[in-house]
Length: 90
Image (tube, rainbow, N blue to C red; front, side):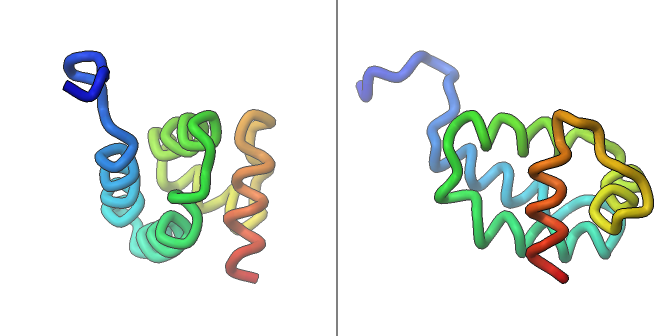
């Protein structure tokens, strides 16, 4: 046994899950933006950063799109992450 808690998600599985959730958003623009961002950044992210990204993926696509495009300010908890995502594609 790897010393992992039964039912706990491995980092590898977590990265795969987050990548998949980034690709299957509902709004094609968010699929493109988030899947490319995830592919380029997830592997290097800390556990805390992955936690934040995971929380971001639970947000509504319409809200995410407005935050990333700068139409509406992102909530403070997500502002730095959203800014990083947006800068990647400017």
